[in-house]
Length: 541
Image 1 (spheres, rainbow, N blue to C red):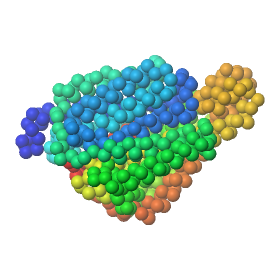
Image 2 (tube, rainbow, N blue to C red):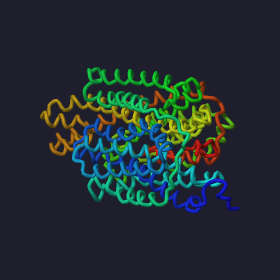
Image 3 (cartoon, rainbow, N blue to C red):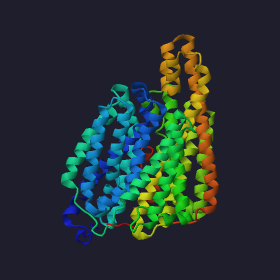
Image 4 (cartoon, one colour):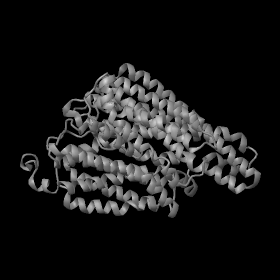
């Protein structure tokens, strides 16, 4: 039976609602493809632009940090001043970042471009969801979200493969240039097909909160990323950590005093909220930290091409899609705390299995290590999302949704910073004795990153070059072992805390919610995705 559009949305909007959905999917698709494709470019960027390990961390983390820091504010801006305008502005910013990235000839220029793209993505994602909820009547909304989620999930899987193919045929800038025609199509189509909408009752914005939270998080991540280069006890590292702690404390104090806080700090008194958010951060910290290291292991040690490396990560998607829809039923039967604790245990096992990597490990061992890691992630995400949303009052559902996305981005940035820095520190210290007898320029190059060490070994040639390359590979694997051990320790501790503090039952989920979480997480290996809180849950139009 066709619903009466007059009772839900305007007739003109209802008539073109599926065309509007197509534009929204296209807009979000480019955000997922653009972010998920970058992991396989890391060795190429290191080789072509001479990137250090810290710069490689920044080029990925810059996007996530900006996105997480602005997500609360950009959603509110779109609701207050117009969602279509916010979407178009985000697409323009993303387009600008892509165009400038293709012309970048240094890593710091590329990092700045990635930050611009992150600002654009922060405007795009919440706008697409708000417009979708506004255009579709309640009886069609779940179907629309499921279609949207499927598109974003496909983008998360397609991105690395497309990037790998492009890197095999063109220069690294093609990874960004290919986005331009898609962005232009979304801009033009959106101008004609996306309706204007806004929330006249939207409360006051909190720009000070956005600035303080972003500055504080960036300072902490800066300290983590730069510490392996300048020393963990160096003045710049200690100053960065100190500034981060002080500014985040000021952020908490400000949020407790302001009338319309960006984030209600009092929510953290609720175990469902505090445990759910911290657990989500740790899940994505582990996943993104591992992916940052494994893509380099694939290409620089196992000698896979970018395309081959991307294809070998594809099995993560079907595992996620198969397991996640089961989590609502498992949570109802055994309790959300036990399911999430078991998921964290799976993450711990997967991380510890990565300690078995060698320069000659077969791909099947890597795949066997990925299975418990991804399965644990799939088991944990949906119950933790439900826990976060159950702690948030219905009138603040939008803020809860934004918090759920922000924890993912923050976890991704912290994972790359923390696990990447631990690996880099162990790599440099392990390689130092080997490079003492080498020329100063060669030694410095080798200690910068594994890709540079491989290049330095090729320059030396002969037995000396092969010895340097072999030593660098073993040093890098030693770094991976240290990083995954630290990640496993955090995950194991989280499993214990979750089993005791996470409520047994949170908000009731559905199989569709679990499926959306699965598709979201597949794309999340690039970026955050569709918000399951709106599947059968409260929404504000």
